Structure formats: structure tokens, C-alpha cells
Length: 175
Image: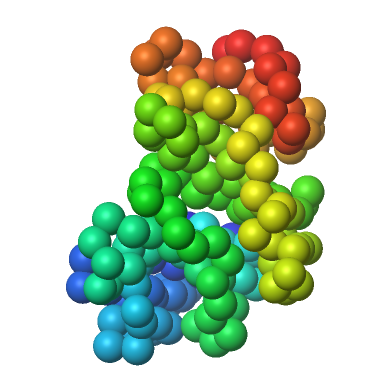
């Protein structure tokens, strides 16, 4: 995931490291190391506006259980954003402009596009109740944001199509 304004690339690798790469000089720094984590990082997205990373991980000692964590772009202040996921999110993206974290699950009973208000994350009494399933569909894939229209462009795998939905999950159009 890129942080274009600072010319940074953030990656996870199969060894369990989360690293940032300075594109200017190709320097790589590990900001999270596997020996200090209780989860195996699988995917991430960068909030370039607030300098945070959101990371999907598999709990190390509980196979097939997943978590979403957040830290700053230096690897500090690591917290759990969402726990208790029994299906691995297939895609995750943060929309820093509108203040939401989105992820998709591909599953027969829990499949869909989920949204969380990132302003609620720092209040531990609120964020577990603030996850909303805004699209109920079993076969969703990757997605991106259409900022001009405040929409999410979402791939529907079985239909082999991309649809535009509002930030509340209402079907807005088809591409």
C-alpha cells in the first residue's frame, strides 16, 4: 500500500514482517517484527491522512481466526480494531477522506462489504458496535473508491461485473 505524499510503500511478507520502503532511495525498514506480534500479518492498507496502517492478520495460536489491527506508520501504538473474525477478509481499504475502513468477506453466511467509522476506533466502548455490513453478498472481491461521487466500486465475482455502491451500500450504478 502506498503513501504517495511521503513516497512510502508499506508491505507485509510471508515471514511476518511489516515494512516500509522509502521509494526515494529504496531503503527498507521493518516497523513490525514477527517475534513481537500475536498475529501473522496478511494484508494492509494505509491511511495517508492520519498516518496509520490497518493490518489484517491471522491469530498465531488460533488457526482460522483473524483480526484487524491498527498502528501508526512507524509501527507504534498497535491496537486491535476488530477481532473474532472466523473468515479471512479478502480485501481491506481505508477511505481517509470520508473516515471509513472497509473490508470484504467471502462466505455463505457472513459474506459482504463491511464498514467501520475510524473515528469510533479510539473509543473502546463504541467500535465493536460500529461495524456495519453494508452489502450482503457472498462473492465480493476487490474494491476501490470513487471519491468524486462518494461511491465504492465493488467487484461481484460470480456476476463478473463491477458495481458502484454508495458509502451506505445502496446500489448506485454499474460499470
